[in-house]
Image (cartoon, rainbow, N blue to C red):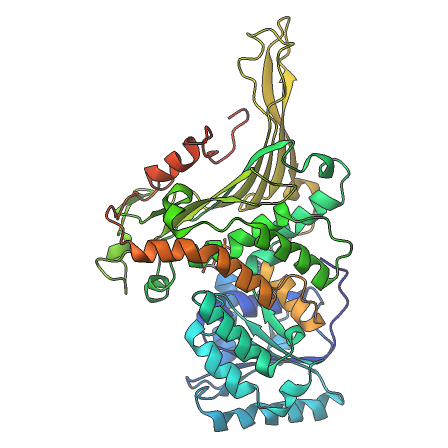
Length: 504
Ligand code: BG6
């Protein structure tokens, strides 16, 4: 969250240049930044990959991606000719250390052409196991010693567990300064996620009640309707806990739970988030069953079509014990949140694609009202819809019109589309602009990543140590396994079902 300026000249190398992430996300984002006049006056994008492409063929492939995946598909042709002049392809075997001199050559060539030294950005849009090798081959290049202008962008998953994350951090920090390393968690680039800070800290209304005295519990749901798709091989080594909870969901908890920052300076925001992560209660391995539930989808039906179970997906072990659903109850042990449960759930092949945060306030005393009036009494609730709906709604009680005193809950709604004409940028647009500007506020610092792994590890270890006996345990198009209902019901609550209905 900052006032953006046009970034200085930038030269962006994308490892995995012909890969899915570049096609679906990075190129459309860079092109949208260009259409919105945010790209530097002088810039170049060099896709790096093993396959053979001429520049022309490579550009065609990217344009194809933009036509399919950009938020502005229809404008694909608008400025494409101009933009694509800045795009080229470098065929290179990233495992061959000698090949990296080609990168230095491009930098020199562009320096001469621009008449100045540009930012040099290495975006590692590659499979996680390739990251250490590429980073260690980039490190020795002279340009990487330039701590001001050279940056490396690393996608999640950042490590596979605490130990591998530490190793990766150690490796990267032996070659790059922390301020050169941009660890992406794309949730932080989402407009609605950034707005959580605006909602909390730009309004006088919420902060006084944003604590254990007024908030009963918090719920976060990040559900998806898709299955493992063609990512079976990746997902087999990941699972819902690593794929969604360790990063995206813990980040959402940080945004909801953090103390007010004294500035929006990158390290200040990140310090406040690390405080939340450090305060999250570490679940003992022996107690995991009281705090966490895992699930895996069976075969079944989604919107009238038969879909395979996880174990029948491509590149998945037919006896796989990998979880495609996780629900966890977290506690943040500090003055603000002590004893307020944060329930989170996430899964594939669920009933709806939706990311939503519910802040449930404690019930108001209703003794003064006649019992009939209070029948439909509901506590206040603040619902922050992150996606696909983008709105914030506050539920409160109102008197129904009529001679009788009957109360019923109503919602006060702020909807992005209704309130603003501007279209929100995609997360990757925001994050790429930040990288070019050198602003790391929305990126994960090394200690944040490690703190997040520390929270997840006991659950991971308990689950790995005990193979699930009931998998698959939820049907497609459902809200996950029954045990997830029990997890929250034990505390006297229930998952707030989506989509939101007034008074539900
Ligand atoms: C990614 C996960 O980080 O986030 C995917 O690897 C998941 O498995 C995706 O589908 C969800 O992102 P979004 O923005 O669609 O909620």
